[in-house]
Length: 128
Image (cartoon, rainbow, N blue to C red; front, side):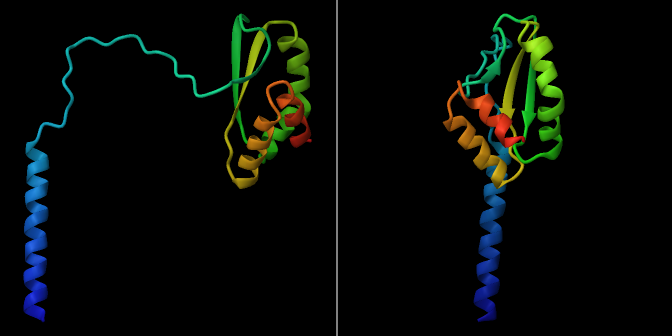
């Protein structure tokens, strides 16, 4: 039995060595012609945004629905930011979910289901 196990281990080690050598000898790098095109923006879905699309400045917030600091920002700072900058067209505000746990993920999904027109109203409820 020990001989069979030793032989089996030897065969496995030999095959693994051959596979590693084959991978190291192969050219896995893609061909590059020396030119790179302009990067195209990727649309991962509907952005939840407030403010004018042509605002001179865009603020992107990544926040978790279960984060106490994020909730504090939305209760104390965001209303003033909205009043003085978003509503006046000075900035465009984009909110992106960054769920740090399951309740935050569920809250983000529910807020998305509310639709773009009611999304920020739902955020206000979640952060209260």
